[in-house]
Length: 287
Image (cartoon, rainbow, N blue to C red; front, side, top):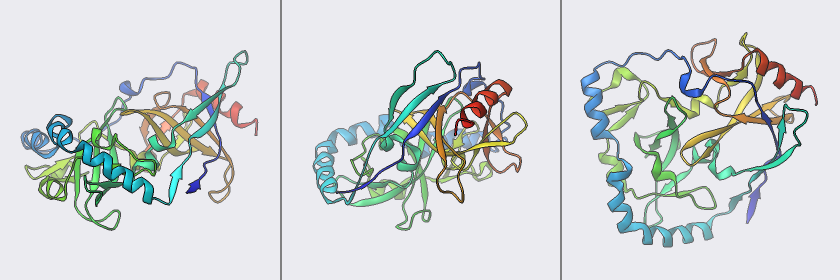
């Protein structure tokens, strides 16, 4: 099998007291039509409980189909091996492993297969709540990634990944067709449209962000986010790159930095306080 090998990642532990992710202060646009939003929240999302019976009925077929898909794939993935670098000089460097299959860039874009092994959709985004928990996965039913109807399902449906990153899901094209459409715009909220929760964050958008200091100056680019189950766990960062190539990588706890609106107001950055910035810059200066 053809393999895509990822480079080593150095992991920086930010030890200073950082504002918890759950305590971040980010202004969200107030959602309109609250009553309609509440109703469509119940109607539009297929939850883990609602999928349970269907999953029990189909899991054997899914397992068999998964074997077929895995045998047919041309690409597999390696874990990301990293060195855990502490800011405490008395702490020894430790080796850590980040499962690449459980990263945002691997999940977003993954193909969803039904129990028969037929492609039915692609994952287009993951929605986090303000505690860093993945609450929803957004899938697009179009054959071309990024196009077609988008719908929201419980994040648990992408928990069963194959070695190639594809996902066997207890869904059908009919279920996707009948599900309410998803929109990022709160103004679109209705009985027939599911919108992103007021405390929700698009992972696809977070991947376009940067790690910044207290003045908003860029320290590194956000390259990926790793998950532990349904919890965003680690930010994978890149710096000293030239035209998007080379450079070094670092990683830090997802909850160590505070999530803020970026200067343009069109996305989010992860902000360090003065003490954390000093630690991170000290780490960067090693290269």
